[in-house]
Length: 151
Image 1 (cartoon, rainbow, N blue to C red):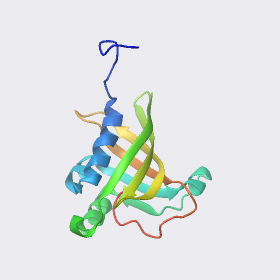
Image 2 (cartoon, helix red, strand yellow):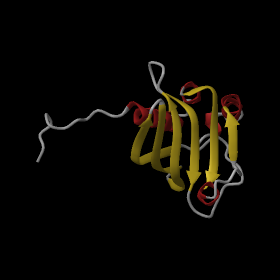
Image 3 (cartoon, rainbow, N blue to C red):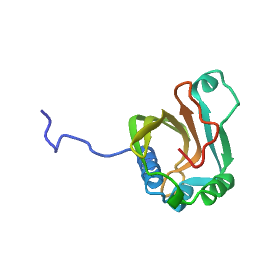
Image 4 (cartoon, rainbow, N blue to C red):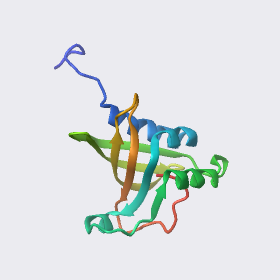
Protein backbone atom coordinates (compact mmCIF):
# COMPACT_ATOMS: atom_id res chain seq x y z
CA UNK A 1 0.00 0.00 0.00
CA UNK A 2 1.29 3.43 -0.93
CA UNK A 3 2.03 5.96 1.76
CA UNK A 4 0.81 9.53 1.50
CA UNK A 5 4.35 10.59 0.60
CA UNK A 6 4.17 8.34 -2.48
CA UNK A 7 0.83 9.65 -3.72
CA UNK A 8 0.53 12.61 -6.06
CA UNK A 9 -2.66 14.35 -5.02
CA UNK A 10 -2.31 17.20 -7.50
CA UNK A 11 -5.40 17.82 -9.59
CA UNK A 12 -4.92 18.90 -13.19
CA UNK A 13 -5.92 22.59 -13.52
CA UNK A 14 -8.40 21.79 -16.32
CA UNK A 15 -10.14 19.19 -14.11
CA UNK A 16 -10.10 21.66 -11.22
CA UNK A 17 -11.95 24.10 -13.51
CA UNK A 18 -14.71 21.54 -14.06
CA UNK A 19 -14.96 20.88 -10.31
CA UNK A 20 -15.26 24.62 -9.64
CA UNK A 21 -17.86 24.95 -12.42
CA UNK A 22 -20.15 22.22 -11.06
CA UNK A 23 -19.69 23.42 -7.45
CA UNK A 24 -20.69 26.95 -8.52
CA UNK A 25 -23.80 25.57 -10.27
CA UNK A 26 -24.74 23.60 -7.16
CA UNK A 27 -24.34 26.79 -5.08
CA UNK A 28 -26.28 28.95 -7.59
CA UNK A 29 -23.18 31.16 -7.95
CA UNK A 30 -23.88 32.27 -11.51
CA UNK A 31 -21.31 35.08 -11.45
CA UNK A 32 -18.59 32.53 -10.70
CA UNK A 33 -19.85 30.27 -13.50
CA UNK A 34 -19.79 33.11 -16.04
CA UNK A 35 -16.27 34.10 -14.94
CA UNK A 36 -15.12 30.60 -15.95
CA UNK A 37 -15.90 31.30 -19.64
CA UNK A 38 -13.74 33.28 -22.04
CA UNK A 39 -15.13 36.08 -24.13
CA UNK A 40 -16.17 34.95 -26.68
CA UNK A 41 -17.12 31.39 -25.75
CA UNK A 42 -19.83 28.80 -26.43
CA UNK A 43 -22.00 26.68 -24.17
CA UNK A 44 -23.85 23.86 -25.92
CA UNK A 45 -26.11 20.97 -24.92
CA UNK A 46 -27.04 18.10 -27.22
CA UNK A 47 -28.12 14.48 -26.96
CA UNK A 48 -25.62 11.64 -27.43
CA UNK A 49 -27.28 10.25 -30.56
CA UNK A 50 -27.03 13.59 -32.33
CA UNK A 51 -23.46 14.18 -31.11
CA UNK A 52 -22.28 10.82 -32.46
CA UNK A 53 -23.72 11.68 -35.88
CA UNK A 54 -21.74 14.95 -35.88
CA UNK A 55 -25.10 16.63 -35.61
CA UNK A 56 -25.59 20.32 -35.35
CA UNK A 57 -28.97 20.10 -33.65
CA UNK A 58 -28.47 21.55 -30.17
CA UNK A 59 -30.87 21.84 -27.27
CA UNK A 60 -28.81 24.86 -26.18
CA UNK A 61 -26.25 26.77 -28.25
CA UNK A 62 -25.38 29.91 -26.27
CA UNK A 63 -22.65 32.49 -26.54
CA UNK A 64 -21.18 33.71 -23.25
CA UNK A 65 -23.57 36.68 -23.44
CA UNK A 66 -26.62 34.45 -24.03
CA UNK A 67 -25.57 32.24 -21.11
CA UNK A 68 -25.53 35.35 -18.92
CA UNK A 69 -29.09 36.19 -20.05
CA UNK A 70 -30.13 32.59 -19.31
CA UNK A 71 -28.89 32.93 -15.71
CA UNK A 72 -30.42 36.39 -15.28
CA UNK A 73 -33.86 35.13 -16.30
CA UNK A 74 -33.87 32.24 -13.78
CA UNK A 75 -33.26 33.50 -10.23
CA UNK A 76 -31.84 30.84 -7.87
CA UNK A 77 -34.73 31.16 -5.42
CA UNK A 78 -37.05 29.61 -8.01
CA UNK A 79 -34.84 26.60 -8.77
CA UNK A 80 -34.48 23.30 -6.98
CA UNK A 81 -31.03 22.45 -5.57
CA UNK A 82 -28.67 20.32 -7.64
CA UNK A 83 -25.79 17.97 -6.90
CA UNK A 84 -23.24 17.16 -9.61
CA UNK A 85 -21.01 14.08 -9.47
CA UNK A 86 -18.01 13.99 -11.83
CA UNK A 87 -16.23 10.82 -12.97
CA UNK A 88 -13.60 9.59 -15.41
CA UNK A 89 -12.12 13.06 -15.88
CA UNK A 90 -9.28 13.21 -18.37
CA UNK A 91 -7.32 15.92 -20.14
CA UNK A 92 -5.63 15.81 -23.54
CA UNK A 93 -3.06 18.40 -24.50
CA UNK A 94 -1.97 18.70 -28.11
CA UNK A 95 0.25 21.69 -28.74
CA UNK A 96 -1.73 24.65 -27.45
CA UNK A 97 -5.07 22.85 -27.53
CA UNK A 98 -6.46 21.49 -24.27
CA UNK A 99 -9.50 19.19 -24.24
CA UNK A 100 -11.26 18.10 -21.06
CA UNK A 101 -13.69 15.18 -20.97
CA UNK A 102 -15.56 13.84 -17.96
CA UNK A 103 -18.72 11.90 -17.24
CA UNK A 104 -21.31 13.36 -14.90
CA UNK A 105 -24.55 12.71 -13.09
CA UNK A 106 -26.75 15.52 -11.86
CA UNK A 107 -29.48 15.16 -9.27
CA UNK A 108 -32.09 17.86 -8.79
CA UNK A 109 -33.86 17.94 -5.45
CA UNK A 110 -32.50 14.46 -4.70
CA UNK A 111 -33.73 12.86 -7.94
CA UNK A 112 -31.53 11.73 -10.85
CA UNK A 113 -32.07 14.31 -13.58
CA UNK A 114 -29.26 14.26 -16.15
CA UNK A 115 -26.28 12.08 -16.95
CA UNK A 116 -23.79 12.40 -19.73
CA UNK A 117 -20.41 13.80 -20.61
CA UNK A 118 -18.77 17.20 -20.41
CA UNK A 119 -16.46 18.02 -23.33
CA UNK A 120 -14.57 21.24 -22.87
CA UNK A 121 -12.06 23.27 -24.86
CA UNK A 122 -9.88 25.01 -22.29
CA UNK A 123 -7.89 28.24 -22.51
CA UNK A 124 -4.83 27.97 -20.27
CA UNK A 125 -3.12 31.18 -21.43
CA UNK A 126 -4.00 33.14 -18.26
CA UNK A 127 -3.40 32.59 -14.57
CA UNK A 128 -6.43 30.32 -14.27
CA UNK A 129 -7.88 28.01 -16.96
CA UNK A 130 -11.24 29.02 -18.44
CA UNK A 131 -13.65 27.44 -20.91
CA UNK A 132 -13.50 28.49 -24.56
CA UNK A 133 -16.31 26.04 -25.16
CA UNK A 134 -18.24 23.60 -23.00
CA UNK A 135 -20.49 20.98 -24.52
CA UNK A 136 -22.83 18.85 -22.44
CA UNK A 137 -23.70 15.57 -24.17
CA UNK A 138 -26.79 14.03 -22.56
CA UNK A 139 -27.31 10.27 -22.39
CA UNK A 140 -30.59 8.48 -22.94
CA UNK A 141 -33.63 8.96 -25.09
CA UNK A 142 -35.39 11.40 -22.79
CA UNK A 143 -34.21 14.83 -23.85
CA UNK A 144 -35.54 17.99 -22.21
CA UNK A 145 -37.42 20.38 -24.46
CA UNK A 146 -35.90 23.30 -22.58
CA UNK A 147 -32.91 23.80 -20.33
CA UNK A 148 -33.41 26.67 -17.89
CA UNK A 149 -29.82 27.14 -16.78
CA UNK A 150 -26.48 25.48 -17.43
CA UNK A 151 -26.18 21.78 -16.61
